[in-house]
Image (cartoon, rainbow, N blue to C red):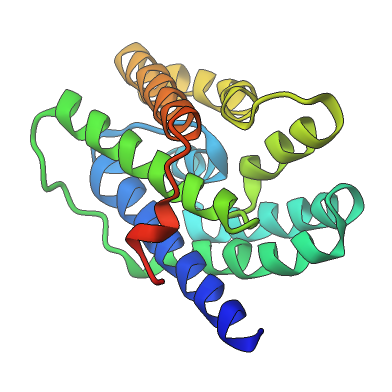
Length: 199
């Protein structure tokens, strides 16, 4: 039992690192706040010079409260790890632009983000933030998690217009769509990403 828990824990850590890379390497360098609490963190950091890691940490603590109330103690415990490690990972992973082409960077970043979120979901965990409400919607309203994630992120994406401009807004919308379709494809094909990690 302890060995199984250790493997799940390792997979959660890997997923969070992958998520931080997708944000700090592929999306944020091109001024794309593609939803999520990390997107909110990017927007607030650019607008008010508030560290994105701090924003993610504060909001995730609140989301953990919702997870405890609506998703149960077991999920709450598993989500603590992802919720608290994401802001640390965002702080540790440097923001660097490895791909100059904005469209290609958004495409890769969105698919990588989808892989990270799916790994977390397949291990009954979450990075906190806007990944928790979709699980609540799925549990109580039978709404697909990818659709739920898209809905909860649209509000944050809208503010790209005011911080980064219209171009960034449309790229952020594109990122959300790609992430949603990638997650639905993985779910439809019943691809278990755990088999690609630790067995």
